[in-house]
Amino acid sequence: MTAETLLILLYIFVLAGFIGFELIAKVPPTLHTPLLSATNAIAGITIVGALLASGSAGWSVSKMLGVAALFLATLNVVSGYVVTDRMLQMFKKKK
Image 1: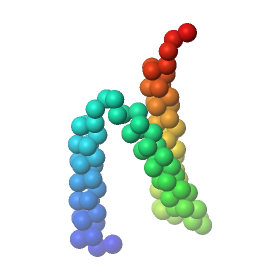
Image 2 (image 1 turned 90 degrees about the vertical axis):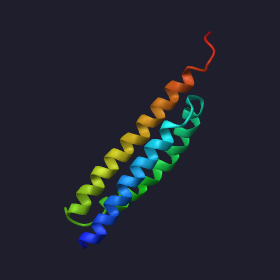
Image 3 (image 1 turned 90 degrees about the horizontal axis):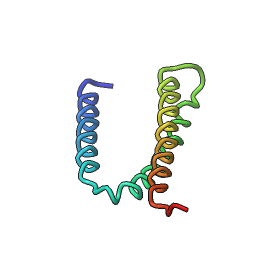
Image 4 (image 1 turned 180 degrees about the horizontal axis):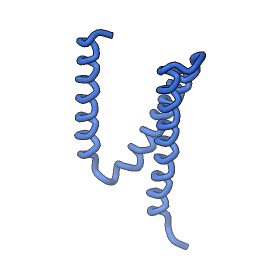
């Protein structure tokens, strides 16, 4: 990978992080639960990609990154569903 390609990828990564932060910061609190549920479903796709990346033969750098991505994506999905469930519990009527 050339230095120019790496610089472009780094630029895209930083720009995506900034735009993502700005978009999430402007979401009203009433929309957080449905938005979180939707992003949890989309994050499940990340798990499939991480499984594909970690399925290579031998212990290469890509396999180690794939295993790390699989762990982090699974942690993201599970914790997202836990947070969503806790938020939905707030709207249930108390008995």
